[in-house]
Every structure is written in structure tokens, then in C-alpha cells.
Length: 193
Image 1 (cartoon, rainbow, N blue to C red):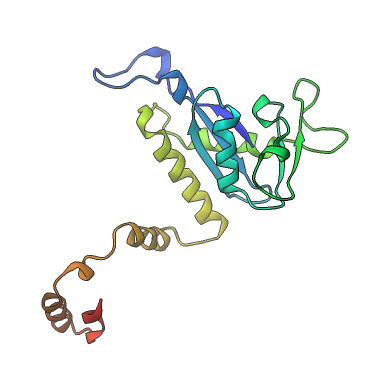
Image 2 (tube, rainbow, N blue to C red):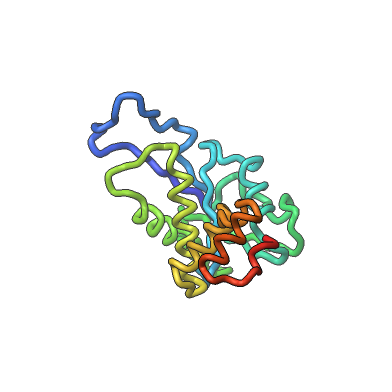
């Protein structure tokens, strides 16, 4: 678990079109959770304060009982296992001023740090609008989900789209749907949709 700064500033400070919203300081941070040994992750843009009141609900909503957390020494993570609503958690903090891998526990944040590199590499190289950051983060997480499970991208996309936008045949009146099915040689199974 970690947080990262997403600047979103055009190269050399040029290229902002008239009428575009500038990147406000409090929308430049992303909080992330990564599962070690997996491509699964949770990324969410957060306020720049990254306080405990912002971070804890994201942890509680996205982590299972028995989770082991490795993080840096950010103050929002202090006594994390006592403040989350998840049973049997352990938290290991790594002080990056001393070392990147804790010599006593072996805890490190290299998994999430590598995730930030992949995520920022996924973003458009010529900048993006601030309102689009969450869309890019969601797309990045979706592609990692598909890759982890070795799913066919097109089939999974169409399946996912059918949940968001149900097929239109179910929205046609019964007479129209049955006529369409009869014209195309389908069984009468679609009449009850």
C-alpha cells in the first residue's frame, strides 16, 4: 500500500487549452493497494492530505480478513492494524530513510512502487485532463484483472459491457422481439426475456 503523485502537467508547462480545468493540487494523488504475487490492484485518486479518514475506508472496503500490509512510514498508516475494521491483520512499516527492505522483517514496498511505474507508463505520454485520471486508472486495473486471469480481452470486454449496457433485445416489446427471432430463425426462448 502506498500513495503516488500524478503531476499531470504538460511538458514545459505549455499546451493547456482555453477552458480546460487545471490540475488542482488536491487531485494529484493516487492511493494504491497491490496484492503481492498477483496483478490485482486497487487505485483511487485521493485528496492530497492522504489522511487516515481518506485512506481507511479504501482499505476496509478492498481488503480481506488476515491481510498483511507493508507500507512506508506515512503517518496515516501508524497503528494501522488497530484502526482498520478487518480481522487478523498485520502491518509492517518500512523506513525508507534507512533502507528499502527491512532487515529484521523482510518487509518492502517494491511491489507497489513497481506498480506505480507500470501505471504511469500506461497513461498517455502527452498529458491528460484531470477529470480523466480515474477513467485511466480503472482501465489500467481492468487490463491487469484480465491479464491475471488469462481472459480473452474482447470476450471479457463484451461480457463486461453487457452488464453495464444490457442487450437491447430485452428492451423491445414482446411482439417485436418474437418477430425478430422468427425472422432470424431463433427459438422462442427470447420471448420471456
